[in-house]
Length: 188
Length: 203
Image (cartoon, rainbow over all chains, first blue to last red; front, side, top):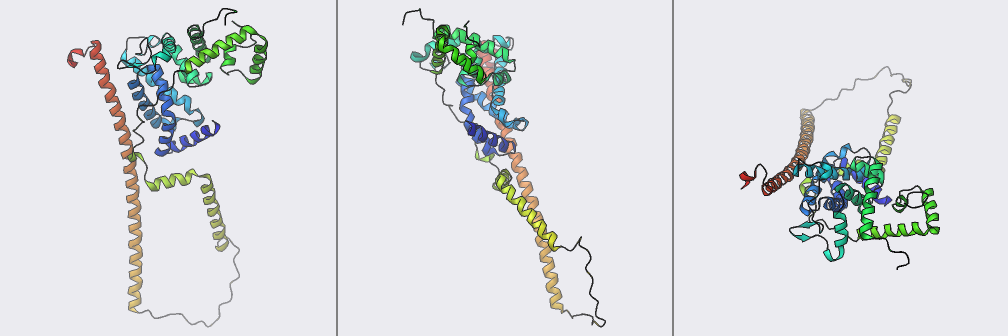
């Protein structure tokens, strides 16, 4: 992981000096993670793919503004978060951003009527995630699926660490109720 | 709520400093309710992680295209300056060259005593033939033409590289425009579906 971070930093420096090859390598390393992050918060494959393209385009155009290559991941996800919320706002301009919901249904991420994940296996998880607010869901995605630290999440979401923790812990409580209900004492 | 000395969720998410992490670990060994709470968090996380990541349906293409690759000489130049060892070697070579030039160049040294010129030195005048003059002129002209050509080549190379970089920027802008256009069309389509202000127009 450390070696990987060093290599990423090298690629970022080379890409900032104009090496498109280095940027391509960087894209190939991050595109799947960024796509899955966007897929989980938009709940739509097509949107997630379009947004991923946008994110890397913006990253390419603004790479010189990134002061510390070690902060590439939160910087990239900040762009992704902004792009996703900008899309939500365009779709429903009258709605408060906090109330914005992705287009997923009760059965999870769908497109053209087909579930992205096998319903038989993942219905409970998808349904539990669906019941979270968009903010709570994004906190879970960033922490559990993407493995960011609280400080990085605060940077991505542009809010204090205390807010990040509050969203995440509320979400975890709700998810626990659904996915790991308390067993009665003495009952195995 | 648990009786853990620090937040059990922070411990579970590995957000505590090492010392606090160890304290919670020690506490959990002897505390049944905290162990159960931790177990529930583990089950929840395992359930969440059962949703696998998807493969991206298509690679991000706008920067993977060959036309975005820089010219070979520019790649060589970037690679040269990107390598610390080569840069070090180049610096050492320049330093050596500077030392050698300094050692050979008389400037800056104390003036050497000039040997007395013999009194009777015959003027050295050698007759030069017309053919030799012509040859010298030809050589000078060839040299000058070569220099001009080299300058022209340098200019052409610079122009070509500038054009190449403009072309790359244009391609990136075109890709951005295409994505925006696609998104705009989709928004219009959605608007039409939801009966927005342009719905009639769409129909």
